[in-house]
Structures are given as C-alpha cells and as structure tokens.
Length: 318
Image (cartoon, rainbow, N blue to C red; front, side):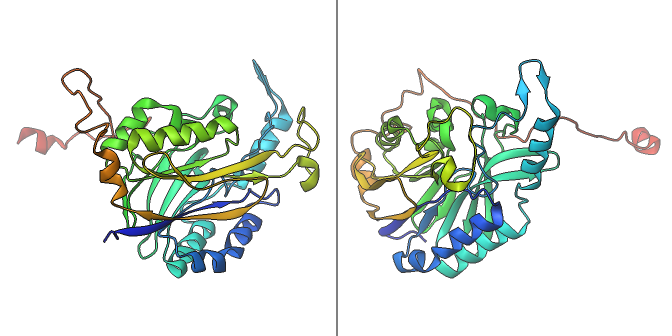
C-alpha cells in the first residue's frame, strides 16, 4: 500500500578496494542512521557491490589482449556477486530490519558473463526483481554483458512505482519513455557519473517524467588515499567525487547534491506533488501524440541458444 507522504534516501559510499565484504560492512555501518531516517526507498550506487574499476584497461589494446589483463578480469570475476549469494541476502536482511525497499547496484555474475545490475529488494519479500544495464558505456563493454528487455521492471513500493536506469542509460530517450509508460513515480539512478552535468540530467528526468528522482553515486577518494594506482589520473583528485541527489517532480532539489564525502541523503516527499506536476505535462499521457509517434518495446528474454525436441513418432501419427 502506498502512503500519501514518504521518504526517499540515497546512500553515497564507494566500493572498497578490499572487495564486497568490506563494502558490505560499510553499508551495514549506516544501519542505525537508515533506521532513524525511516526511508521507504533507499538507493545505493552503481556497482557498489562488485566494484567499478575506474581507470583499468584489463590489458586490452585494439587487436590484442595481454595475459595480465586476463588475470585482472579473473580477479574481477571472482569478486562479482551471485544473486543467491551472501551479499544480496545481507541486503535483504537490511531491508527487513529497516523497513526500506532497497535498489542497489551490483556486478552480477551469471555463468561466465558479468552484468551491471540493479537489484530490487522488498523489506518483506526480499529480492523481487533485477534490471541489467542495457548498454555498457565505452570500455565497460570489455567486462560487462548487455541486458535485454526482460529486465525492465516497475516495482511497487510504499513510496510508489519504482524503476531503475543505471548511469548513462539515463541518456537513452527510448528507455526513459518505456519506463515512464510503466508508471514511474520513483526514478532510481545508480551511477558513478560524478560530473556536474549529471545534475542537469537528473533534473531533466524529474521534469520530463514528472517523477521523484533518486541518484546515488559512488564516492571514492584520490587513488593514493586508498593505496591504488590509476594511470593518468590527476594527483589529489577524488576518483569518483559523488554528487548524489534527490529531486522532486518539478525538478526541485530536495536533498544534495553531496560531494567529497560519504553520507546518507534523505528527503520527505508528498505523493500529491506528482499529479500536480502532471497537470500540464504527462509525457506518456495527455502530452503524448500516439498518432504521430509510437514506441515498441520487446520484453522477451533473448537466449543465444534454444533447444527443442521432435515429437515421438507416435505423437506425430496422432
């Protein structure tokens, strides 16, 4: 059941260089603060469990791959997250204890392929849905597979209908339109994009969709602070500087942006702000022109191999 008022939250932390168990410890260290804040929906950053290896080239140059890159990918693969694994189970327990629906970015391990995935966790039912990033950006395509239309959920929460678009998926107009058509009220945007321009993107989506937007970005300090080496990165600059933000359906900033540190953002929200905002603009409703523009979305699961068996001869004879 949805409530007339609700709370949204974004937890800005970084993936630990020591792996998912250390990152999970950081997440759980915020439990008391999350419980006190009483969010109905809590969004965590892209790839917060499994890691975002910013600056890595995985030993790849055009036309060849170096052996050390294969070793690096092996380590990254080994650190990825199974949907039925301990890390997701721990997030389910956290959701249950705090009462918050959680949308969290993970690196999902599915057989021999990795996906950049957002998991949807219900405080009572646990893991209910996933969204796999449709289009990894740039060299992300070296290490992540592409999701298909079968993982574009719209999930009911106490705050309303929640959807997720990961990082630069938010720049895909057709994906945005599809998610608006699914009834998006809470737009969850796990990301590692800390650029100032990202704020304009989030504000645009809030205005375009007339929905609440929660963008949760990682924060990672300068590589030398955490004992890392990132080639060609300016000394002293945060590797990912944050910028998590919560916006209302007319583009107003409700909390954040948070930069330069970890932290929890929380905003009190009024559901009636959505119909008030859509009074003069409903992008898939009264402001649409279906006789001019139409969008077809294929939500079927795509498999590279399908198996079938011929009927027994007796069955063929009837």
